[in-house]
Image (cartoon, rainbow, N blue to C red; front, top):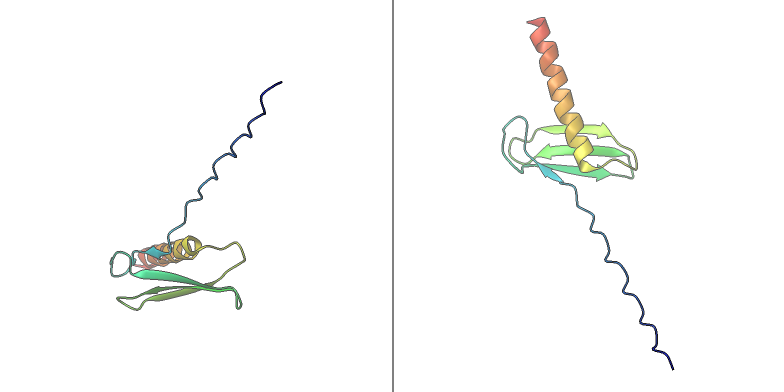
Length: 88
């Protein structure tokens, strides 16, 4: 008579890290004041500062996350600043 085989425990589930949805404003430099909203129905992403009321909107895809909208906003701010520096 042999022992019964014990059932192996399943491996632990991998935890996926959540990306941030709240960021610091590039205009008023207030931390955690910019909130990004994704409107999947109309495919529009919007970043809004709760302190200085600055806004940025862009078109999104099904794979777009809040960090993508914020990054586009920062890139656009840098692009505008470099154009103004070249003109002056």
